[in-house]
Amino acid sequence: MPEDAKVDAEAEPLTDEAILQRFLRTKNQPTGSQTLGFRIVAVSQSEKSVEVEFEAKAELLLNPMKQIQGGYLCAMLDECMSVACMVASGMTHVAPTAEMKTTFFRPGQPGKIRGVGRVVRWGSRVAFTEGELTDPEGRVLAKATGTAIPTPFTSYKAK
Image (cartoon, rainbow, N blue to C red; front, side, top):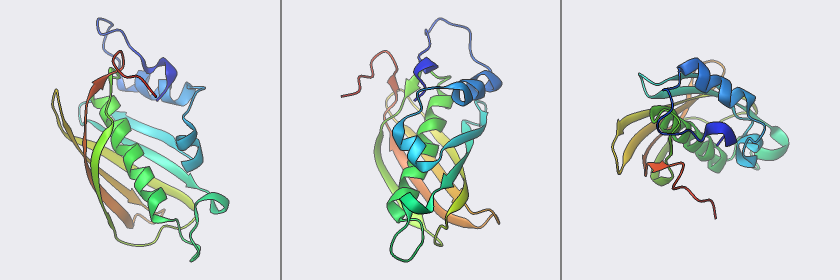
């Protein structure tokens, strides 16, 4: 979560471009995001969605078969869906994942992986999310659905 993502609830709503620039300018990208090679590409508050890119590093993320280990693909999907929640809230909430189901379609390879995260339904107590990862040829690697708990930035306390 970008440090400067904390927004006063009475502030002017942010534009999609302003949100995108906040992510691109952050100097405090979480280490998990760094490990995954996370970079945000596009945001849409009206569609409650984000497009992201991951740079899957062979020296960090591979299993014995020289494919991206499935747990890292799950982490990428979780990142897509969580960031979509932040965007859907206008950058006023985080949304810790309560549960997530993942389906794997094909192995991921080192290099670029495209991710899309969407909020299907945003409620005051629960958000329902979807995520999808594709390889550079556009083939689906994995999909996930999740349930998250919207939590205002002001209430969120990392432990």
